Length: 290
Image (cartoon, rainbow, N blue to C red):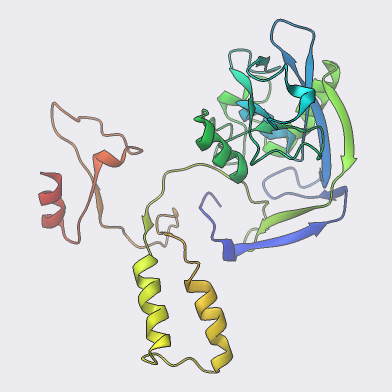
């Protein structure tokens, strides 16, 4: 649907193992495999050494920028700091890093591929280590030009199959094993949710939430039946910023303006906060711009 999706609009399905599913936007005659963990190998640059990682989303390897290992794992002591070769993106720099927060050395191979632009946990890891955020997808779900010539233009799950086959030819594929997992689907389109970095506008809701909690505690607002107070407090005490720019065609206009200064900022960068101003009115926005 090419829009940001609220957590409330995601339906989660528990897969017990390998499961074949149709995916909207893909060939309706095809089904794609989920619920598996696929191992593949990266070669240490300039050597014959290999490091094996495992993933449930093989196609995201096109956006990999690092491999993380646990700092206490003796198996990878000699790998830390080494550069790896990406089999499809030869100019990409991939380095072996240590991260005790992300990596469980007793799970899988103990080495984790890092795709900061397409996974929430990898995103946090990318921030911690100042890694590059590489988007390998178009909004349509197709692989973009960054994902390499072989796969550009393919739908993401067709690319998953193609990448597997190419890695197999290169003798870089490992085992494929059953992996119980939760799969998030959009409640409207039934499409599989895809983490995707895109600039958005947010409202800080902390103050509003605190006032709403106090209103109930002070009996200014009465909730009936009273047992729903627990839900009220649970929701508002854990409030998150509210995304208000979700590219919905029926969405409300947001009072933000892009600034152009002839001869100084002729082509403002829409991804740069400094090139935007906020104002309740046009006049206020002009004041802020000045």
